[in-house]
Structure formats: structure tokens, C-alpha cells
Image (tube, rainbow, N blue to C red; front, side, top):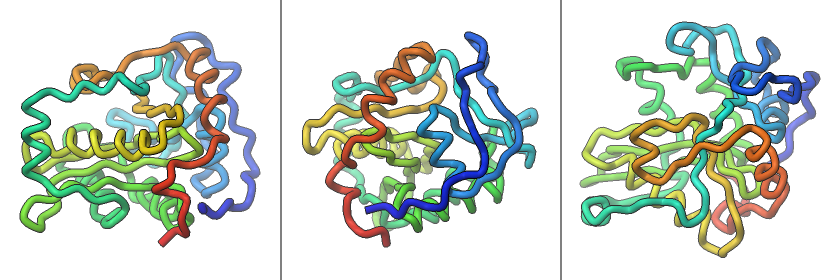
Length: 228
């Protein structure tokens, strides 16, 4: 089971945010207890600046919020064919997936060294997880995020081969669905790409309601072991 870190000294809460306001706080820190407290309250950290990649820390609670719900994933026939070309693993190469997502050559990069270090610590404690996609022994795609109960807060994904990030998403949904319990996959913002896979937008109030129903539930079976 994940190791609960020391409690945060910050009180992070987006309750006072205006409808449609995404940025709800600035400052605080990236200690494990702070990050977990934020996610349990419906917030997540991302730097401020033109590409959200600065060292000034913002706390975000998008309204509307992009989410994937049980039964909503769209898997096309071409994606099913693509999945057969790849091998998929879970938590085999977290650091490599994080590096792929944080590649500074990617357009719109926002993962600073501080953010990367914070999620690395959370992985060591058993909270952050990755899904890897391989082709002929090479890492060609993946995603990472946090698992809190039946919430999976997806942080980022990348691909170096066609459909590899989509295959990672399909594999993640399989992990979340293994024992039939309700779950919530938070992707922060809906994009046209994510919408094509079944991601929908919901308002902040509905997100908070759904979050409260899943965040304290038992983890999916895959993540109930001792962190590596």
C-alpha cells in the first residue's frame, strides 16, 4: 500500500473559485503531503507562465474539467489493431515515462525539474504510477499520474510511435476496471484528441461530487502492493 507522508502545512482549497476560473491559488510547495492534499481537494499543481513551465507554482481546478468515466472510452478498430503491435507494462519504467513527458522539445512543455522530482518522490511512496508502451524493446509511449482510491489523476502522456499514447490510455482503463468498482479518470482539460477517445467535460460542482465518491475507496488491485 502507498505510504502516507507528513501532512501539508498549507490549506489548499478551491472552494472560493469563481465559476469558469481555472487558477485558484499560487505558491505553497511540492512536498508529497501538499500534493496529495491538493488532489483530494480537486486541485493540481502546474507552473505559471506562457507555457505553464515557470518555477512559480499555480494550483488549478479547471471549470469545466476533462474526465473519462467508466464506459466512455472509445476504442476504434484501428486502435485495437495498433494495440496488437505493442507490449504494455505498468510501473516498469516510471522515470523513463516521466522523462518522455518532460522532453523540452515537446510543444507546450510544462513539466519543470521541480515538478518531475515531486512526482518521482510520490512514485517512491507508491502514489504515482506509469503505463509504458514498448515496441521491439524500445519505449515508444506512455503516461503517468496519481492514484488516490478510485481516482486516477492523469498528468501527462507521450508517444514516439503511432497511437502509442492511446494504447497506454486503453491499458490504464483496463487496470482501473479490473474489479468492476466505479472510478474517475481526471485528465484536467478536454482537448479534441481526448474528446475523440471519450473524454467529456463536467462542471466543478459535479467533479467535486464524483471525486468525493471515489477518492477514499480502495485502490485498484494492481496498486495495493508494496511500492517498489
